[in-house]
Each structure stands twice: as structure tokens, then as C-alpha cells.
Image (cartoon, rainbow, N blue to C red; front, side, top):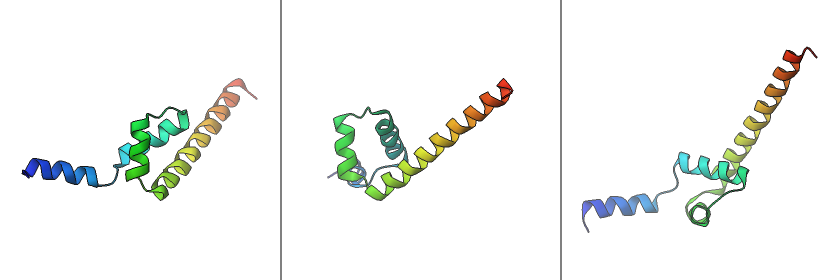
Length: 78
């Protein structure tokens, strides 16, 4: 096996990157996920990582919505 093939195999065996997990959480929040990505998530991803990212994404989303509403109310003079 050549060095390039060994590196490719190590990447395939390794877990998911942060970017891949974040994109999966974002796709799940929007309800659009390819079957290929879903299979990758279930075979290579760790549930704890997805739970933490999901909670963090939800918290950030709620805080952004609250901030936008407060800004609009402030600008409207209410």
C-alpha cells in the first residue's frame, strides 16, 4: 500500500471534523440532510459531540432571535 493510500485510509477511519459535524447540525436544523451525510454521521460521529453542538446551536439561535426582537422593539420605540 502506498503512502497516499495509507493516508486516505487513516482519514476514512478517523472521526468527523468539527466542520463536518457543524454542517450536519445545521442541515438537521434546516431539515435538509443527504443520505450519504446521514450515513457518515451515524458511522463516524459521536452522539455526545452532536448533542453538544446541537445545544450550542439552539442556544445561539435563540439568543440571536431575542437580540433581533429587542433591537426591533428598541428602534420602534416600544
